[in-house]
Image 1: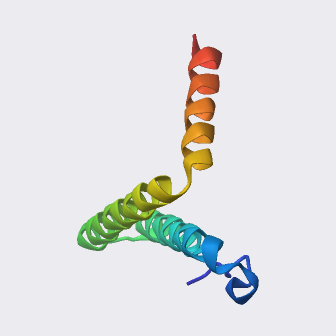
Image 2: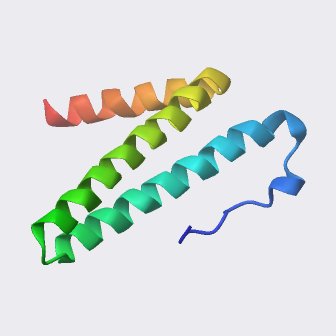
Length: 93
């Protein structure tokens, strides 16, 4: 993993630890997506590019899995995501 865990999970309360672990998982997956897409952009052979983009797509699915479980465990996150969505919709109108 290129990114570092941004928090000392040993110092997180047991109540909050699973949410933080899910967030770390999301960071790792997004990091992987960025890596594979950058490598694909540099790849010379089409089959290498195609493979890297396919793997990046799978990492996006993994990120979605982490997010789906996080949203079940963090209602404030659900509210803030909705708020962010509304702000973008207002901005684009």
